[in-house]
Image (tube, rainbow, N blue to C red; front, side, top):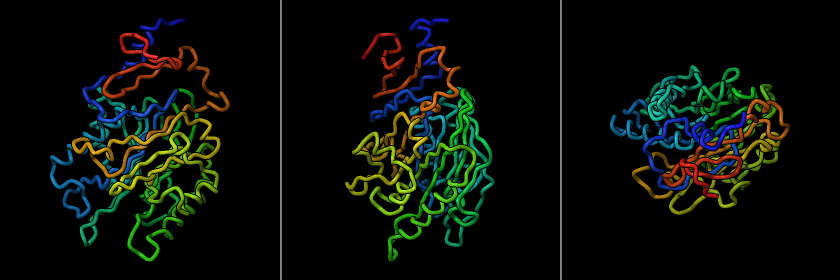
Length: 344
């Protein structure tokens, strides 16, 4: 059945529109059906007494939670891959609840991993990586895995397969937090090289699907050995592919990519865009919640082969996006205001 423009606009804006204006331009990742956002949350801990907690009061914790939730909803995240959060089962529920409150429906939940920890003798709270997802768009497939069987990197490096509900297409998402740069003899590089080696080896034996996307704070710039080893193993940096001047971290004016989005060849064919969203490095202190920018990747699964997308071709592709506080609708490459006026 043919639908008119007004009907398509209503479909595209069916989610709740919320009163939050982005201080920086929200990246456009093209005709994606799935949006993945990766974020280093900079010590997002429920235990406010921990020495490494970024929040020292409940008010600060609530404010940080709401800032992240606003960003993840504005980026239309179907999956949030997050690291540097407290190593327990419940921590992601706070972000999920805030996102659902903004969204107006109970659509977001998180992958359970049975990870737990308590403060060390020095007051340090161990960290982990994890996944939040929109259960209307995707479903986890199988259990979450790690390249390590034990130790801190078992929690900080996680692998999860997801299925797109509309197409039954599968892909594997790896979220990671490699060893931080340190004052040691090699600045921690030998451990980061091991992190990359372990990840490559594990992903070679993951049987869920051949399409693999590696994301996270790898604590290494593109020219450094850990990233070069991933490239040699067949993973292409998507941020540089779509923006040669990309950066995710700003250290005293020195900008570079520490947070990566790397896809193998079959996955790269299905990436529609990959950009850093400069919410945390652009100097807007009232919006800032981390020292790392969010990374947004758009996927259109089945794009290279055409498999599994017949049921989505009844209507032209329509998507809503927010840019500089204004809401636009893109339908088959043409952009309209929500009132139906064509912009370009």
